[in-house]
Length: 196
Image (cartoon, rainbow, N blue to C red; front, side, top):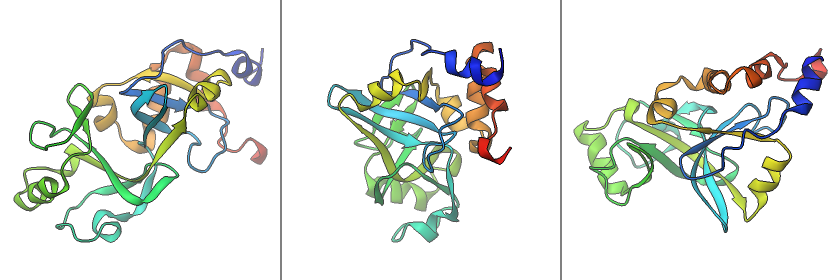
């Protein structure tokens, strides 16, 4: 059986979508936003799902993209195709930032912007403790389930270390490897199969 046949026969890993889970795109997804992407789900319910792509950095720095904030030397990521005029963030400072929503043990979505600015000024938050996203990824009711039935994604359980500790450039491959032998051949597929 060749690699493509193996890929076409693979089925869901039976982990259900939920807040704090990761979506790993199948290797042949050619979409600009979601090709070889890792998406952290911040919410999943009957009404729909939303989260942020973790591994698509933009070329500009934080203060080039975000105005009216203190100097902060951090990368910015493309969070998804929805609401690309706004800034979203995940961080490890939920005990210090009001209105944060815990999505994984020790990892939080959003929070009070004024508190964040103050933390930047006082240097009580570092770039290793926060990730910024322009836009987010969203699915309407049943849309994500439809994509899962088509095997567009596999779902992985996440830890704070997975999200904040893996270099984005190798995140998709690293997490696919962690999914076990059944998925390891995914990384051998070319990014653009038509280029072969």
